[in-house]
Length: 557
Ligand code: FAD
Image (cartoon, rainbow, N blue to C red; front, side):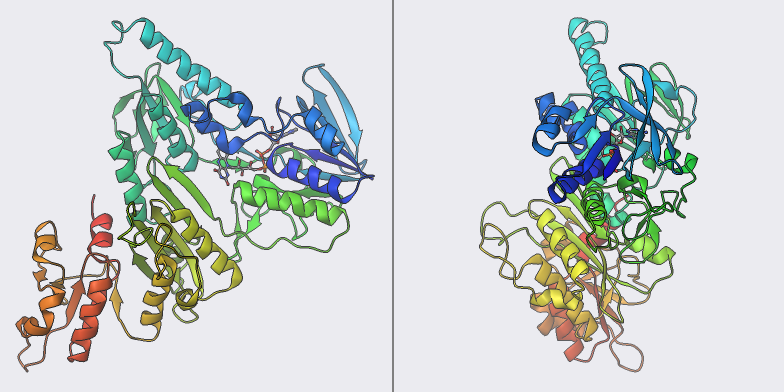
């Protein structure tokens, strides 16, 4: 049996090595267009920024090392230009020897990845994209030579920093913004949407935007680049930004050119259509990774999730299928994480934006716990948002933005979604605890308590976008000092510790009944205690979900 694999990085390399581990007798040929295989594409921005000092650390394997350990026939600089499904052959162009040949297969695996989207705007040739080692070398060289030019002629540039424009505020765009800032460039991120980091909801993305600005990155939202000139970029609102360097990172689209030309079916999202065994419409051809349509585990809808985890999982799985094992690929949650300066930004499942657009019933909960017990030094805030179905308590999605431990919490929540753990059951998870790492009531448990209280009617909450001083008498139950530092306009300060004695100050209507009340505190916890007190005293009370922190984040701009 002979399997040919197109693409030798995440999905392709995983498939090749797994297949070898399962079948020593299999002939395995990996054809890779670029000059490198199995390189660390996720590490590329950090090499440009200098965090990864050595280029060789990005090169995890070579054709020789893969041959020595796995007996793979790996050919770099080898581009597949056509597939003939009838003859079961591929046409390969050896870019170094400048010759073309055909290679036969019994099974063919496509893992060609995705291509950066480059909009057809004037001057776009000057913009650089980041996908391969070659792209990395190009960007690194451009940055190095710009900086060298500044060093050698400080007078000529007036000692000013160089300017970079990063087009696109997604994962790669923000990693590049940070990396270029690390290289002392003045960076502006230009984003068409009205927020950065599309998988997040706006009030969570606001934290990321604030972090970028805190580190000197300018953020231009709701605009697009319409022209790239010699030293500037022109924006759709008429602004012209200095731009010694332009990075284009507005997203990727699945690389389906070979599959389309070979007559393979495409899915509704434009990726290659595959079944749960990664089989395409031709039963000898499989496809994995960024190039395929995946199934959203939460909604069941087709989706494109260009992430390394699913590419690697699918690569491993397709080898199992070819080796004759019964297995199937489930859906993807889109669990993702990125470092933005001192913040960790992570998400899994579906956002509120998507749930609202789909008209689904959901509830949102926000919390702002510390990463570990407050009395142990170094605790950092984590803002967590959980979305769940109010009728079943099924967890639909989660987002977390904060300091250390953010990654752990989003991974626990992603695991909970995969395992079918209900949102209220998070309260009962037994999680590791010692003061340097967490709290006896872990942030994940705490979010479960909030959901449990909502579901069993112990508390009624209201969202940051629903609080209205004309509807309800709004009471800020924080201390007078906290109130002075910022509060919801029209709110009255009645600290929680005084409430038992002073609740009579809450006005009554003409028939003598207390008016409806909305309470809030800093994060929702004191508000909950106050709400329980007033409820038991006969008041109609709601507590502001996520408290002042969520409200002020969401309404900051
Ligand atoms: P790839 O790994 O891109 O491999 C496809 C390979 O196929 C390419 O090397 C290409 O040269 C080759 N190829 C294409 N066409 C042909 C052809 N006709 N003939 C021969 N070879 C061909 N994901 C995360 O989950 N976390 C991260 O932090 C993260 N960071 C990233 C940072 C950057 C800068 C980039 C670019 C991506 C990042 N990703 C990250 C995404 C992740 O790298 C991809 O999801 C993953 O690599 C996809 O695997 P793949 O096998 O589908 O495609």
